[in-house]
Image 1: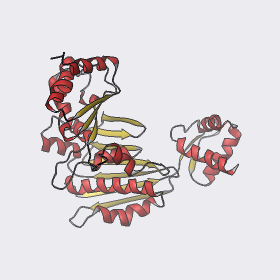
Image 2: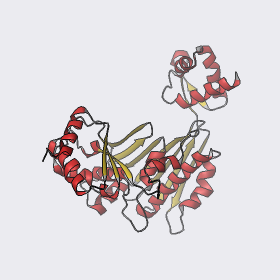
Image 3: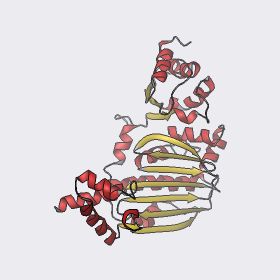
Image 4: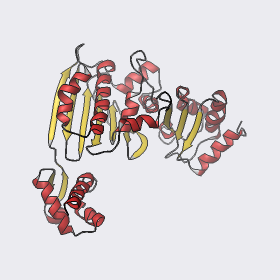
Amino acid sequence: MRPQGESIRRFILDHVEKHPANINKVTATHFAITRQAVNKHLQRLVTEKSLSEAGKTRSRTYKLAPISSFHRSYRVNPELAEDVIWRNDVAPALGQLPDNVQSIWHYGFTEMFNNAIDHAGAARIIVTITKTAATSTVAVLDDGVGIFKKIQSELHLLDERHAVLELAKGKLTTDPKRHTGEGIFFSSRMFDSFRILSGGTSFSHSFADPKDWILENKRFATGTYVHMQLSNHTARTTKKIFDQYSSPEDYGFIKTVVPVRLAQYGDDNLVSRSQAKRLLARVELFKIVMFDFSKVPTIGQAFADEIFRVFANKHPDIELQTMHESSEVKRMVARARSGSAG
């Protein structure tokens, strides 16, 4: 019975955040056991301080209890180095974790902290870490100019939302001599949850939902806030993520996924060549370009023609793929590829 008990408690820890009020019922159904049996495991986790509870009887809710936390502010100066902060502060604060999980945190944290040092123009960087029995969360906050505003300004883009679209493609940097522009792209795909807030815009990516999101939010006071969360027991590895977008011959970053709907503003339909050209910016840096049409029910003839005939004819060495397209989008793409849309 002991292995099953450990499985039950692991299930509770992995699902309690989604089901705080009915985790008892969800667990009982999953394992085909009584709610009384589940309650014993819940009480054990509360006693061990892995969970906290609130309310009584039917209104009782559970949530993950923090088992450790860390908060520190760093003054930006020439001596500040991300590898030193990782080794002396962050790795010890995260504590003992499987090697693959530690490797993801090492990559993600050092990339985000280095971005704040090199690009933000910040005076201070704040790092906050919270660890529970199931997950770890790391936040990096700086008081600089704001990542989206800087990208917009230096690359002469339309607005901060346009900067997020370019960021989602990867290989974007305002300092190509010192950076490849790969850090945010790969970091966003390694973590269970990855989010950047800056100005009035946020960019988020969830491993469980491979679509990227641009959200409008209340204007962030200043700087950039990066939030990363990862299960302490994930089987994911940095190699698996790199291999998804790299060439097996030279490990070059050759593939990108372009979230087409990020080119939409409000209720605008994707119909014009200008919109298509904006979506196509910098994709010539890749050998394989996957256009994700999630949440895009239809596109216009000119939009499709610009991508799948005009651009395709100019760049025959680039493979253009599609995913999650509706029947209407499939029809327009096929029409453009056949050459009849011209």
